[in-house]
Length: 347
Image (cartoon, rainbow, N blue to C red; front, top):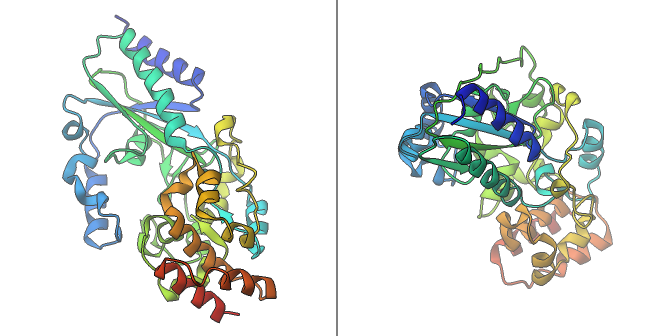
């Protein structure tokens, strides 16, 4: 079996060959992050995301989730991103639907899981591994805390992970392992006195540095939230119909952002920079076809229509917009109808 240092170097090499952009290893002690999570939950900042409190301490204690775990292998892979100017131009164009960068391509879960499976098999082949489990946003894991401790970046004031060399547009994945591998140095925070992400947040969801009230976050409101969007939040949503990137788009560190190489994360042409009116007219069958294999499925068709109705309400008034909104007034969903009525009142 390989020497631990040699094995670690090989894991890094194998991960690069599979398309991961970086890899690091950490221990499993993240007690301070556990306290931060509990404080966040106590303040009800998680909204309706009950899964954030469902698993008790397993989210922060790797050995409870996967017994025998002593180290965490953290990996990252970059996805498509717009630069600051492109993002601003799109946000300012109220006739176009803004979809968060990560959701424009293929669902990242499938792409990354397949890579993790290959990497895990390779590690098992070259080590005395007894047990390991891999995750990509699919289990109760405080992934950003482990990734920070593994040297992949620091947790910024917007609560996303930032890498000094290439920004924050990346997915994270983990392998919990019982191998006693050498650990990396944790990343150092480089946010300094900057508060750009706090200033640009459309709904003031970042209530203080490193504190996000998800109930105010547009990503939560348009994706995780399955009910009506609060009236006082709707104008601030603008044309964002699935998620929001503002806190990252305007982060100064993302001027160093790396362009995604993996073709799976290339934006689908029927999703990128599309007119709101066209998207709103998709039938359920068209929506199923056009969103197949993407993260957009998470909002559901009703959530999709609800979000676009709000965006149309925030658009400049035209006869066409009124006709498009009115065309769906007799739909089956009372929630969607309520948002359409609101949108029409804006015109």
